Structure formats: structure tokens, C-alpha cells
Length: 239
Image 1 (spheres, rainbow, N blue to C red):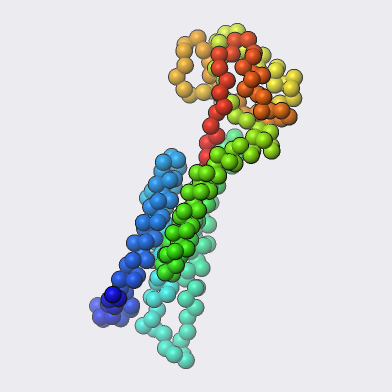
Image 2: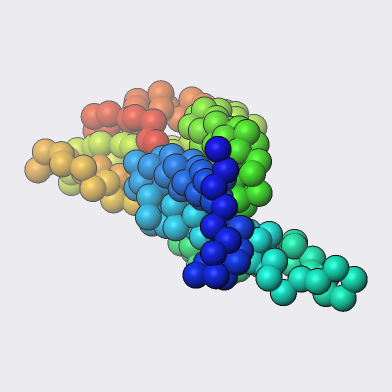
């Protein structure tokens, strides 16, 4: 049942159950996006995604319904998409602030895209396209979760890049031998980090990002270096 609040107290504008449903739908759908981003430990998490999605829905509703009291047939005509179009530009500015460059690599692209996606979901909900908004949320989890593992495997196979965690004995020059082994096989070391995990006092942990031909054998080859205790495939940090 539609309830219209056209009382002068509300400016004579159409506000009712339908608009509230669309607004709360935008809030609920973008909450799911925010939960996924929060679980991934990203800066633009639950609060950011829900605020962006709900605000986008509200702005679109303002564009649709907010000027009804000034419109006059044959004299004043407004484009209802004019205000809504500015959401895209504004979210682009917000997303740019989430993208950083660290050690020559770009990070935050997926998080910035998720904010843009939340804005689109909010706009769809505000326009009454709840089925499309729900479908995009479902597709988000396919791309963010299922495609994450697929992308990692394809990158390792097609581009020849792996990230490995190595634990070796301290004080025996093992790292030098590891680098020599990589050089012999013409593997390029693109990143080398000290490992933050707890290990024994006489051990050292490092994380290497390597690329090159036949890089899929890196775990086995580096594991055979004298003094190496373990070589494990390290998880890539998602955006």
C-alpha cells in the first residue's frame, strides 16, 4: 500500500513507503558489500560502503522527486538524470583517494571499484531497480571471492609469477645461495620482504616474489637448497 506524504510540512513532495523501501534496500545490499570488504581487512569497509550506497540512493531520489513543486507543464522542465549523473563524478574522486602505490605496485584498485559499485547499487535501488541491484551484489561475491583464486592461478601460469614464503637456517649464507639459485635459472626477484610470522630464534623467514620460465617449480627447487627448512606458497594480498 502506497502512502504519500504531500502535506505542506513535507514540502508537497511525494514521499512514501516505496521510497523508504528503496532507501533501505540500498542500505541492506551495500551492507553485504561492506561486510566482504571488512572481512578482507580493507580501509573502505562496512561504514564506507553503506554510506556511499545509501547516499547515492538518496541523491537519485532527490533527482527524481525533489523538484516536483517547481515544475510547471510547458514552462519549466528538468532532466531527472542531471543530479544523478554527478554521483559518478563524485565517487570517482573518493575512489582515487583509496588507490596507493607501494614498492612500485598499485594497490587499492579493487577497493576503489567496490566503492564505485556500491554507488551504482544505491542508484539502482533508488531508481526502483531492486532486482538489478540484488543481481550486482550476487555478482560481486563471484568476482571478489571465486575470481580471486582463479586470478591468482592464472597469473602464476600465464605471467610466470609466484610468491613463496621461505624459512631457512640463520648464519649460513642461505639467502645468498637462494639468490644464486634464482640467478642460475634466470628467475627475476621482484619483491623480497622479511616475514612477520613467529619462527624459531635460529631461523629466518622471508617472502619472495619471483617471475620467469618454469617458475611453477620454484617451491621444489628452492626447497632443495641446503639450510632451507620449508618453502610454502604465500597468499597474495587482495586489493
